[in-house]
Length: 225
Image (cartoon, rainbow, N blue to C red):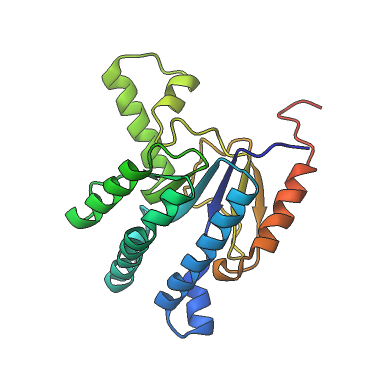
């Protein structure tokens, strides 16, 4: 049985789901948020300690401004309304990515959410916002040069946005797309990867549990026989 400390998820397919079911990409993003809540609940139930969610990439700025604004407003609404529930559940929120481009209001909400939940121990959610793995690695190298310390695997890991979290044993991508899309390229070097055909809003706790059970039975060699 493989223990699971950390699951990472690329939540792909919200926009396509919205067009298919509600004729609106934005309604797909709203439906995707409901799926997030279900998966968080099941992650807590399974006593997994870390969950990293790819919410907005450095490349997503290329999307229409109205859609980008809707996404951030949706996140603002979620964090404002649900922060007390996260605290009650013992969930810690950590934002990984470059926060500098965000509005002052949204930046303040993110920092406040991190501060209010920083002592929680049940589950740490790494919310990847304006996140790109290549940018993360460049940032880590710049920090290493600034600190004048040797370039080693340990020092690189200590200067990644995910410092303090174990590398994910399991990476899930929904949306019937088989690529990593600049997500946790360093951290997923030995992750087991599951590509799922379902669009993110249709991904259920049952689907999640099937993957967790399959992972637990997977033989992991790490280069050995």
